[in-house]
Length: 393
Image (cartoon, rainbow, N blue to C red; front, side, top):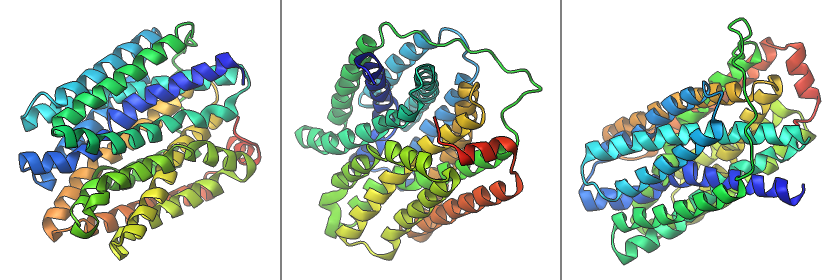
């Protein structure tokens, strides 16, 4: 990979840092401070969180229809995403927080789909597809940054200062990417005929499993910091637990992609699902700090990896329709993410702790794994067999 290719990769990483790591997941770090300061219940926090995922669903679906001016639309959405982060620290009404999270979700969905598809197309053009997994390191980088700086910013003021600080970091990332991508041209996309849809064969099973993964993982992804913060004996490690998630996520995508190129792809996908189930259920079994940090590490090392592997596998099934594949998978994922926090909020209110929500999440992820294996058994096609027997490029 030469300097030009490397700069394009760095730009994509920074865009996902903005949209996913900061625009979406910084809320997880801010939530316990927001709840304490504004006296919000877990259910109210879950509704605010769900706003992002509702928006993400809209954005991911809309991105699949963007076939021209991708780069300009992407840049506009990055700017709007950063504005939504800034205004989270300005307003003090639940309805406004919910609305801003919707804006963050819409822009995040568009940024994720367009950045991923543009980079995949670019790398494929230069036979560099094996590097695509590194893009998703931006998610972990943003999570680690928010886990580190949010408690620091709060110590200098309050949760509002945290949002202003995150805005500055995101703006810096945006400027750097605009410079790195100044000469990048998006590959034109042609809408597929209705008779040639991508949602068929094993792709159906992959999409449903991916949606269930979105439902299950997002419960830990939304409430981990608040969960740790609610346990007096380990409360001081709440922010650090999110840093560990980010550190686990940064190298996970390229590592899992490498494993997929070395071994049978669906076997590696299945292993990642199993590890994530363990990660989600661990805090239910014991709440000592080492177990919680292990849970955070395993969680971070799998959820980004599953995103990278699922999108890469789907694109390998339909190599000429990357935008449609990423959009369909992301839409399914987003539907699960809307349901997850709301269901968790209801369970927490009913049972008085996060344990029931985590058990529910682990069962959902297990069901996703079962569907993936059943789909592979019953929907074997020449294309699927070819993907299973070759590396993902």
